[in-house]
Length: 205
Image (tube, rainbow, N blue to C red):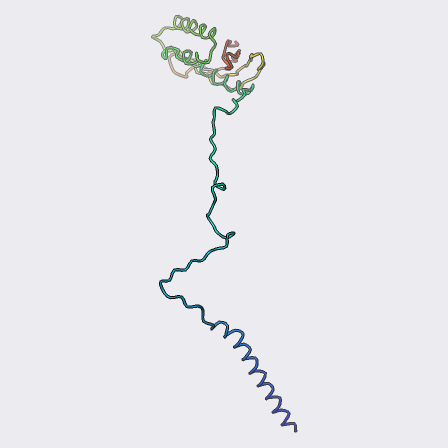
């Protein structure tokens, strides 16, 4: 009796395994072995993507519109006190650096930044320097701007006063052979037709 039960148990296990194998075959192996639709070689196939998946197609209304940028329409830069301070430092270096061998050309180069009054003064000053120094012997001064101080800035009135601290060095026979010293330059500026121009310059002893 016990042997019959053992045989029955083994039989049931075998039947269960057969069922499991049959299920696996029909569910998995049968599906993977299902033949796909045969397409003859050389036949063109057109696959239409859904409208939302089409890439790279735009309508005329979607195309970016070109814009023209006109620099002339941009608002002009408003000059502030610091702008004049930096401009005055550059002016002071050129104004204070000259030599008789260069025919005092620095003053001529700076005349475009001067008012008519200062331009006339520059011509007279150059003539005076030429009379004082002999052309046969070298004489020159090298000036380096150190700092600036805004003493006055009135944009509406068009007036400004700036002091530039400089380091200067005179040379006679040997270039840069003299003793260097610190000297301040007081500059007055006025606005003429919207442009800031240098009107007066004073070396402070």
